[in-house]
Length: 300
Image (cartoon, rainbow, N blue to C red; front, side, top):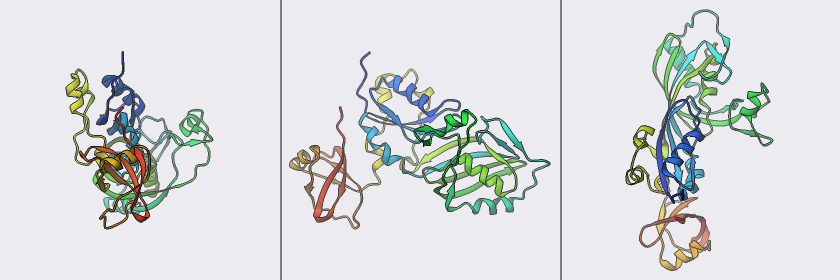
């Protein structure tokens, strides 16, 4: 069957129990799309927002990945697992009853706010010498990993009962929630792992309804299309300019052109639209009013 030229972004509510890549392939098949990719991998255990970018929208993925993300997480104290979540095998158990006060918990949580360093887990897609760490982990191999800087913007304690903690937190890209929960547990002198995890939002896609598999399955083509956001939907935080036909030709050919902007600050990246206000790509603003094409978005 001939594949469709699909362009746009689907805000998928990924269900529990499947990988992000599996969810991507299923959605790609439903839309019969030529090209698709996802933004920000979710573990099989995790549910929630997984943006699927089709066609030209795949070129926006690197810019969407930089956004901060918000999660709801239920953590279980007293047990450490091989994977850092409930899908792994329990390997360490804290002896005795977990006795932690709400004040002690809040103090521990607050200590992780701001810029901190985190050592990525072995069960992650980070590559070392071309091999993903999780493939080594599956063989029982553990290697040294360099700590990475992350930022925890907010942590809100929703509830705490016995050994279960319910949190809502906002963090920078590259933050591993499983590792964060393990580190919080260590701060409390116990073990811990993620029991449930749901990505509520990504900064550039805030306050948007997610679409479930149930809503998509069996839909007619026009209904499927109605679920797609425009290609530039996740880029609206960037400043923009509209250019004339001559500059459009230059931009389309990757050539620098002159355009005097009235931006208060010199932005690193700007959105480019043609004279009909159709989004055509991204550019860098350089000195002397020069605009250098960065990405050209052609719907083909």
